[in-house]
Image (cartoon, rainbow, N blue to C red; front, side, top):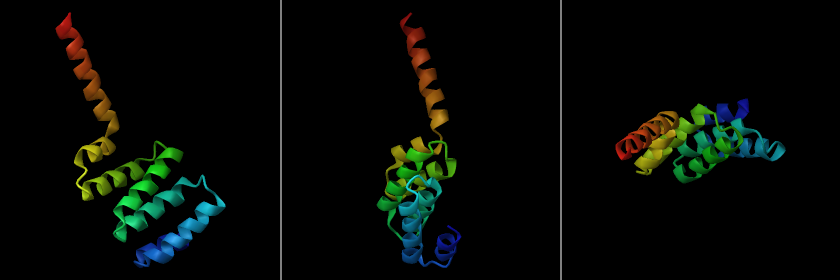
Length: 109
């Protein structure tokens, strides 16, 4: 993993992605490798593919906040603002929706 991160830091994204893919092939449940692959993809301009990598990261580790945050950034890059907002703070969104539902219920009573 360190090699791929170092390659990303040197902006050698294609080589970094190959390294992360090898790690993923060896351990398909390595959510951190998917996350780092997403970062390298995003930094290399492959935003849609980065979102796919972040999605896989979050399938494997739903609570990985950094992946959720970077997915939101990638969605913003593609002007998918509404989706991005959901990624930035889903807990707050759930609280808002719950409050709205409560207000609707109170209004109906």
